[in-house]
Image (cartoon, rainbow, N blue to C red; front, side, top):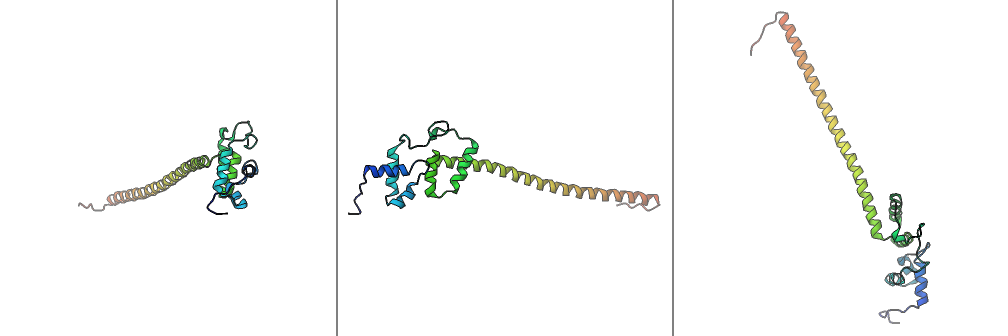
Length: 170
């Protein structure tokens, strides 16, 4: 067969491949492509063309379609962390199982990083404040020592006058 000609696959074969890419034990289009020798682009197109077929897309615990699910902050964080640990091949299956799009997980990740960035800014501000406080305390100690020296000199000057010391004029 000429390699430049697109290969024709039977409808039943395409349906089997789509079934393997959905559901709880879904395989990513990349992984399936390597396994069966069909291009990833073809597998992805077949999956898109199949659309939401009854019984093939997971539902949430509330019976809603996965895309309409309301995610709590904890669930979003779990999804972001789990997605970050997966290989590119496994990520597709995870996203389908959870009913998510990669862009949505990316937005959640950025929001989490921004929130954590606020914490680090607070910490860095506390560090700056602590350093400033130490500097002010050092300055205060220096001035207290200078004041104590000035007071000691005044006392010595008074004693010197009482004992009949000479007055010097400048």
